[in-house]
Length: 271
Image (cartoon, rainbow, N blue to C red; front, side):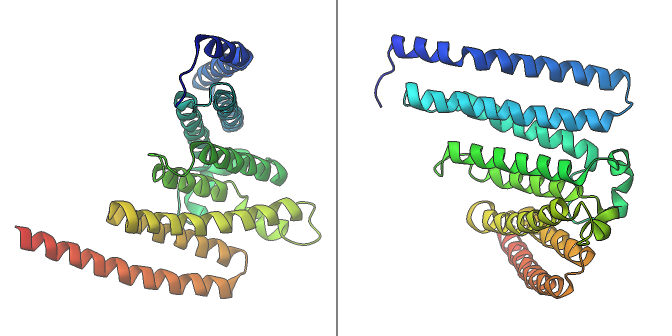
């Protein structure tokens, strides 16, 4: 690795200075909004949605800092990437406060939490989800394949899949997926995206279990995401696909039970 000269470092700091000003402004606005929410919870849900969007913008600025580092200094800015990762988690956290992070749950279990955003347009829901997905993808690309955060991204993607599902207006989903509905396009695209995300989250947690942790909880979470996918398919009248997913759930549950028995046998032998 070539040594970074003082001149190159100075040039880099000059280039990122405007972005640092914006970053500081976003962080200050976040702090102020949280203070306002604490003092007056009226419209807190919409304020948290705005905060979630701000954190996505913040993550994009941190990713830009890394991009400039690669161009000017030819090295990654790990601190900026870590700050971007933390910003994405904060964005998801604010969304979870509005729509929950429940995975395999019926709408009735979190309907009361989403009641405050019933007026939120389907297009805005879909736009926010797409924006979050793009930010996560850009961050993963910036880190690259050979990163210590590889398996932690499974959790990030899973949390993303859950909030992407929960922000769907389940009460209106039948009406909104009717061809005559003005909300048909954003709702249909949103549902398709969530189906893919839930399936991907299930496979990724299963992969994490098999290749990294061997933790039963990771396998259970994989099955939970399949359960969430099946629920969504049932709600959207995709019954044949729901049956296919149920068969996959049955197979994975059998595998899980077998693995639990094997782990228990190993523990008993070691006692």
